Length: 176
Ligand SMILES: CC(C)(COP(=O)(O)OP(=O)(O)OC[C@H]1O[C@@H](n2cnc3c(N)ncnc32)[C@H](O)[C@@H]1OP(=O)(O)O)[C@@H](O)C(=O)NCCC(=O)NCCS
Image (cartoon, rainbow, N blue to C red; front, side):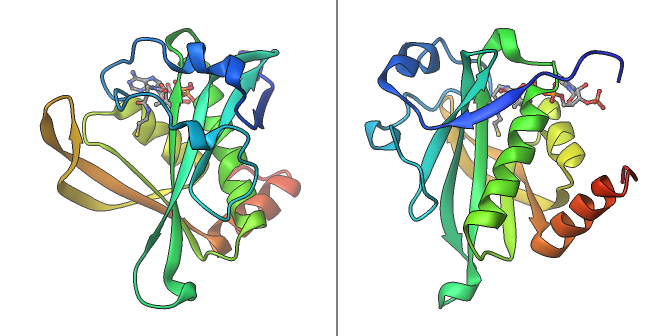
């Protein structure tokens, strides 16, 4: 990578972000406005979101919601999502923001895995997730309703041990 790495911050959403987050949506992110309940949410106790700030500007948002693979708290997992404003895409910000969110979720919860899901045609998000360290697990058929149709998507995950290994490798100066 030759370009300068942008400095990306995740912070609670504020009222002033809403006009930016409500900009016309693109192909893969037309899910409507973020619910008002996400504003000022700062913990991972419930579903929520944070603003992606770049150079003092609102560049978009990340979000998370809880799902479960079995009864009891140990089977609970967090699924993350992201949407950047058009002018902030393709500069490494999506990768960095999702790295920050994965790190925050593993630090702020006891989940064993963090999940993500994206449309089978969303190559930018697939590549960004792979750069963060996610593994593609399979196709989720017709799970997501978007733009008037049910869509197929890929399910991705990263496990706590895998994230820890990546952090250790980065500290040691070895890029996995
Ligand atoms: C998907 C999204 C979050 C990715 O963030 P981003 O900042 O644009 O992506 P990055 O700049 O970090 O790029 C990540 C990788 O994807 C690649 N990429 C970027 N745009 C791409 C495209 N349109 N097609 C294929 N690859 C693409 C980049 O080249 C990079 O890989 P590389 O380092 O090997 O070259 C962002 O584009 C976005 O918000 N899109 C609209 C909403 C959306 O799709 N959200 C996800 C819904 S699940």
